[in-house]
Amino acid sequence: MFSLVIPLFNESRNIKFLLKEIKNDLIDYKNYEIILVNDASTDNTSYVINNLSFNNIKIITNNKNKGQSFSIYEGIKKSSFSTIVTLDGDGQNDPADILKLYELYASHEDVKLIGGIRRNRKDNFTKIISSKIANFIRSRILNDECEDTGCALKVFDKRIFLSFPMFNGIHRFLPALFKGYGYKTLFVDVNHRKRIHGKSKYGTMNRLFAGIRDIIKVNKILKTKL
Image (cartoon, rainbow, N blue to C red; front, side):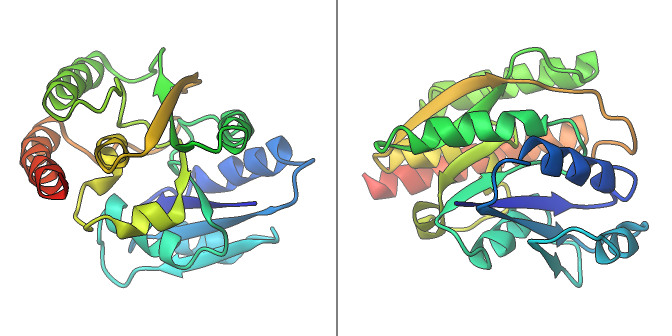
């Protein structure tokens, strides 16, 4: 059993198709729920998700934009199951990989987080290079042994996640936090797809400066823990 948490900000043209894919890929699996967190979208997202005909979906609506991390946090707090799966709402993560990661997680009792690695990313050159640089710096400093912490597709333990100090940007540092708190992690290759509709919510420069700030923050958290 798992809770699939999907944060949404202006993904009205992506979410319905993504949910159909999820339903098709999990057609033989019934023990899960989908939690959609609408992060104060300014497009038609609210109308689309509130008129879905799917079952086992919870909808959470933020009154103001809180960002991806806090949206994930809100979804996890209101989830029903102890195993969490996170997925982006832009359609770039492939729902066909959900069960692959979940079944691997379920078969390894000692592993508390499994993350996807986007080996063949379908983003523009600038985004790929800046991400590689950021991943290299972060991994060297935090020693999280993860080459693609920005991949949203992850499976992890709810209780452990909620024990971490909450901050904006935490979703990118889960491998470092799980490992730093003494839990075993595992990473596997997953498919990555081009964004069909909309645009990325992150700019290169704001992600760079936020990433530096958050590396310092996580490093302090882990040193305090030790």
